[in-house]
Amino acid sequence: MGVALFVGTKRGLFLARTSRSREHWTFSAPHLVGREVYWASLDQRDGTLWAATRHKVWGAHLHRSDDLGATWELCETVPHHADARGVDAVWCVAHGPDSRPGLLYAGIEPAGLFVSPDGGASWQPVDGLHAHPTTQTWQPAGGSLALHSIQIDTHQPQRLWCAVSAGGVYRSDDGGSTWTPKNHGVRADFQPGPSPAAGQCVHKLLLHPARPGRLYQQNHCGTWRSDDGGDRWSEITPGLPSDFGYVLATDPADADVLFVVPEESSNMRTTVAGRLRVYRTCDAGATWTPLERGLPQRNAWVSLLREAMTNDALDPVGLYFGTSSGHLFASRDAGEHWALIAGFLPRILCVSAALVED
Image (tube, rainbow, N blue to C red; front, side, top):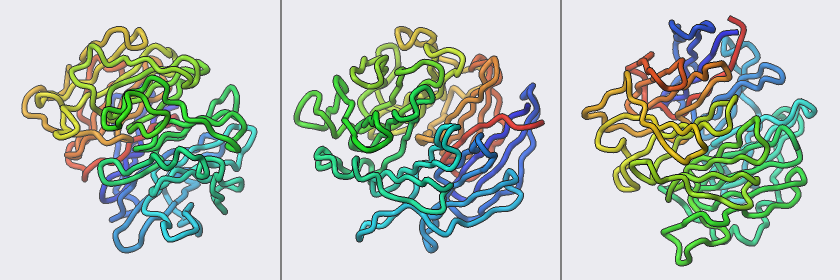
């Protein structure tokens, strides 16, 4: 098995391929030309490649490919609010468990969660979340109010989480019928109270695939870990050069390993001190180590958007991230060394990885 990278940019989707050694990469010409690609991911259940795009004239769309991007189908329906809010963008698509081959979830802007039981042919709103009384605390963050992270527990498929910016983390234990905010202990410095039930500005939420209940989040106000499915959160920011950032990546083989890229502040939103460094913890956030070999350490004032970093499932884990300046970096040894594999792409909005036949 080799690795495929799906790199969504402001001007289309690029596909990169490599062998299991991850030494040499080949790149496609852009797909979905001229569209902003907010999300792209391969559904390992059936091999469908999904992409969520936005265009200033054509609006928000979903696209699917059954042949790794050789041909594309424009989906007839897109998840959207039935009222005047409609949809500005689809931020994420989550693939259901193996036992439900047609089940998909989507998060959109303005913030909403939608479910499709039939592989994207139709979409219904998840009313149990939309009707929750705490949605009154939700507010736009950085210009948009979006539901951007959806995580499904592979051990308990009826349990899923979503995250809203700015709205917080929510969990359902019954397949989406009912929801509970899960933000206990998480700071929201822009709110009147120290730890409100909801209204936090979550930038990225990840569930570790191998350890039930282990969640990580990068928040507007720090980096956090939960060991009990979000019932309680512990801040793991100490040891990082800032409490601001967007991206997260994990090692699927080790739940105590996490990768982040801190940014200067909410006002600056670029790498700290102009040094592009990935920070890794191997002890669930107790300590952090900067990883910088192969990354620019002077005048690298770049930012990483929330979906612009990912990992593969090989050993050692491979890591990949793209910058606002169109630079795409890769590591094939858990971040010890980095290489620039593409340097002149359009602004990178998302990066995802999948194992595919070499």
